[in-house]
Image 1 (cartoon, helix red, strand yellow):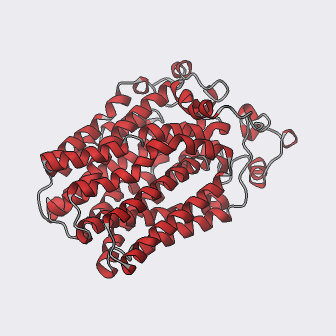
Image 2: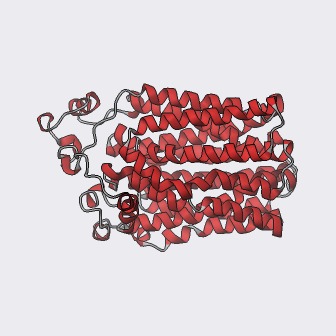
Image 3: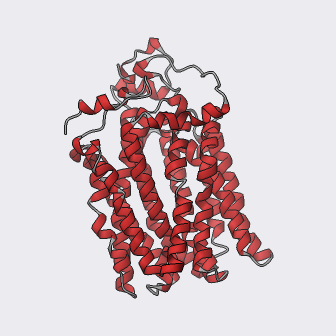
Length: 460
């Protein structure tokens, strides 16, 4: 029995759920107050993050005159907290109010980012201080991300997860379209340091929209049963590893995790030298660097608008490996790009191909993970997934910096893009290739989810 089929007498219902009963379907996302607050807040926060993603390396390269390796350390420090704090963050997200944790993280990041222009105006800004701010912001981002991924399933109907994730990803791509160009313009107008006031303001707006969300639907058990009671607290070590144990029992998720991890490693290796590559190999001005990232966002934005339609036509399982394999040849445009405006355009097109891949792949993979994960352990499963696939990111960033320093920027970029494309092998040569659609959530909710049996029931 689906959640919509449970009669009102069987459990307490929120106003949004009663509307589902009356109309015979879920409330449209564009009319859901809570979803719109989440979407608008994260859109603004993503815009601020995209501004800082260009401003931080530009600040280090142009103002602090950092070397290639020193600039790559910024990416390393931003992502290193995923390796050390993801699993503890999962426990916190499951034990405490997730929305309040997210608000606290937003306010903390606001203070940290706002301190950069203050430090630049009060005294000389040093590289060590930039490293400190980036590292501490990374810790707060880990906790925010773990809690954030558990929010959408509480705010929308399970059948709306793909659409909801697609809209959130589209907001990210819109921010990527506008943010880098805006960052380049702001840096040119007011300087790299003062640009971070914009980033701090974005986190404040995100915290405000999260605070305005009135209530979250109560978690519901499988098959329309009563909401799950608070589970007995396990020893900390056991609880920490419970998310990893769940992933080990999921054959499909294991292949998705391997693909995501490989891709993240090489993508971050290229990202750690990307701005330096554009500045020193392609002779791009600071505003052109922002324009490149804006061009790349177009691919994700266009695909994001049709994600639901594409997934239904291709199949929710098939779209995962198609999205990772097909755009690969376009990645080669990045290391092939010559110096000058034409090369900058080619580099942007290569990034746009990857952006399109990321939208289709991430929406399908994230939606499936959210559907099969029991509500009571959503934070720990998200944390375990992020611990592995984001934990390699600082290693990838460090590798990119070392490759760029030892082999040169262009050879390093070749290694990175070929490695990114190779991630598709995990899902191309997996059971997903024989399937059209992923198994339903009911295949895994009760037992922790042996998917192997479910795979045979979903024909290609």
